[in-house]
Image (cartoon, rainbow, N blue to C red; front, side):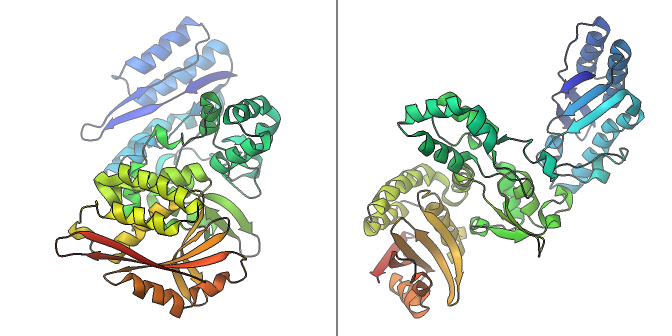
Length: 445
């Protein structure tokens, strides 16, 4: 079996329909193959699909072995133009033309393996290839795209112990932190627990638990698509239910952002109900939650993001110490520094910004718009010993927000929790000089 390890990047200039491809292939020392690979990488005068045929035929002829083609990130060029119908169609045609020779080379191929972030319709790109099988949700391959918990525990114990020593934690405590930050992915159900391999291995290399996946790139495309679908940060919530066709759908035909969130790894399968055939989807772990919300924060606070992150860190310490009023005083001081803009003069903007801020308080359980028999609570924050029930008002007083919590009996939902319950009414108002005024009132039960 002859292997072409084929890392690809397509550069497409649509107005001139110019396509160039960078390729890297294994070198078995045979001059003819080497020459063909060099030609494939450097001769743009020949169409890309012709160069691909030539490379496959030469590899097969010179080795007498069938060829394996591995294509990584096949969807990368399409994601750049997925929201531009005319350019998307033109690029799809170009890619369809590129992949079409594979069908004529079937006898020369052992198999072709393609990976990508998102799912595009087979008919839109691979219409010439009739025998492609999508294995993304097949149980035998559930652990193929990461490091399973079994592999971590049984094959990386030395790494875990080294990290534990560095963090001055026990083996069990370190494993729990790794699970909290990097575990949680499931690509079908049932499925083993799958860890993000990039983040996990980087953590071991740097001997530090941190958010590494988001450090490798900002999800600008995702943020733009969230805007296109009017998808708010609060919509991520704790979990969402959906049928398979709702999230395992082709990107170019999706009617909600759910397929993109799932296929890009921002939400994952957490459970499955056989009777209803509904999957439960949620953010997989702390790394994704923190990275995603930190990426969203600048779109709500512009130049004040760094100061907000500092405020959040200090608030977290105060809330741990059960000093909620001091924490909210810090938040009040921060809001006084935020410039007012006309496009933020509505309750939803402040509600979403506040949700992001509280979601970044990662030491606590945060639920937005929690449903109760009495209505919906804007924000619920749960610590080890306290539950904070919060209502947010714009253009009204904090006292009015607190009175709504009491009149709607929101706190009744937590009466059996065994924890102290604190009601917090919060308000935003804009003064005549365009100063943003944040205020709050709290009451213990």
